[in-house]
Figure 1 (cartoon, chains in turn cyan, blue):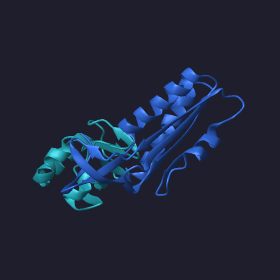
Figure 2: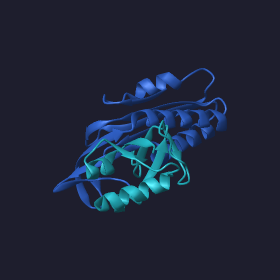
Figure 3: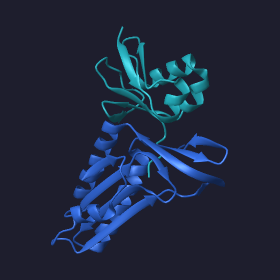
Length: 82
Length: 134
């Protein structure tokens, strides 16, 4: 069962009160499934998670992307630089 | 040149980094902290970034500009940390052979930065604070 680590930023980091979370996921778990799983575990964060994009190895990935244990994963809330 | 910094942004330095005898036009953009947003009186903005990804995405914007506007050079710096009203949050300088490319590439740089680079701002206003972005 792959063990993954996910970096959190901005509003999501504050809501989950962690800069990084570690969790075990079923083999073949996708980026979209990760977000759904986190929304179930953290209902208060669900509205925020609905707007989040997933990044793997510092690139945005589509919902169908299959997570790998070696990936540097991050949840990217809507960006607001500038 | 691409950078994320907690130090004040020096626009003349960005200009000197991109200027050259092959460029007949040079445009700059600076984003500054405004004192109001959506009817609220803003007191400060705090910026954070997913640093390695933000730098990688800024690098991609730079490469994209070099492809779209041959001969154009861009320097782009975003400030991180807590900023007061009037401080520069982002600085961009673009030098290009001609003005059309210099204006267009500078516009492209700031629009792309605002849509894909993982940087976030938290607004402090009278009576509270909130993350910006939707």
